[in-house]
Length: 431
Ligand SMILES: NC(=O)c1ccc[n+]([C@@H]2O[C@H](COP(=O)([O-])OP(=O)(O)OC[C@H]3O[C@@H](n4cnc5c(N)ncnc54)[C@H](OP(=O)(O)O)[C@@H]3O)[C@@H](O)[C@H]2O)c1
Image (cartoon, rainbow, N blue to C red; front, side, top):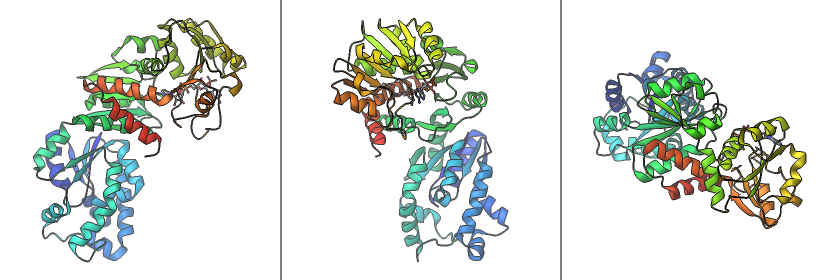
């Protein structure tokens, strides 16, 4: 995995990058140097002859090349964040570290160096102020970690970066995941030197090698790797073993243990609203999440009926967890005599928010309805359940509890649940 330094000119990317590369035994790449080499012209010459757009095109080509490299320290140019594809590429295999400083400090560090043409302003200060104001939100959006460099030496900053503990989400796709928001909010609240990033992973074997080789502390695992990852791990905790799927990996000095926090999290979310023992549960779905939930419910002495679009999968799961009955969706009217209904299918997820798995007429006021779909926060199923007088359990509660358990496994600290919840709810509400 690469370490990619972003930030304004004068933020210290080169000075920090040099020390960091030496400390970690990595190659330092200075992107502006590569661009100059590629064009055979200095930056002022590129801009004077071909304009800033040409410079940005060259920069984009260099980023595309560098994102295929591994294990480098990349000191980018200040404007790399201006083009979104650059960030997407750099993030594929990189930890993006934003070095921040105020305008006075940036100007003082740059001094008399006028090797860069002005972008926006008439004076250096004006140029810096306008450019920083324009880029600030882009840096914030792109960064996995932000480090305030004010009053710190490049050595101290490099040390902070070198000692950051990295956790990640591996899956494909990962770009819409809310996990980085939840985990990073928790790290920030506790002031611990951790960072959570997403890695789009097609080749799971290679990803596991990276986790081991780079000492990545922990990983959340999502579709499509929850089952295929098993054979690359050293140990499994009992729920992961029983389910045959992993959503969490903890790396203890190269020994990788797989956990599955989905089942526990679903029980926690349900038990906020209802007791489980002796209840009649209709669980719809037979995919990875349904499997984890069914296995956890089995321990709670419930009577379980499993329904699924593909009946054979429902039967297979019912056999595995010794459920009372199984069938396809033609048996959906069984909901009318159930105490708890769980939707563990993808039906109702955005953008298909008009869909619902259970006709409204089967919902009744003695029923607790748990929809594990969390996007949107209130699915059509939950809306109709409320209208029919049911108690409801939101899917985001399960997401929250599984993230909290992961956080504790990764860091050893109690999860700051309120902080994580507010980051999650804010994200779901588009904040
Ligand atoms: N809240 C949380 O923390 C949490 C955690 C994990 C997952 N989830 C959510 O849970 C859902 C399922 O995840 P998963 O990992 O179990 O997925 P999965 O393994 O792909 O399983 C998908 C399930 O949905 C069913 N399904 C798909 N389209 C359907 C349709 N049009 N009509 C009826 N059934 C349909 C599938 O039935 P077939 O077997 O017939 O294909 C299968 O049972 C996703 O929406 C995911 O975002 C939430």
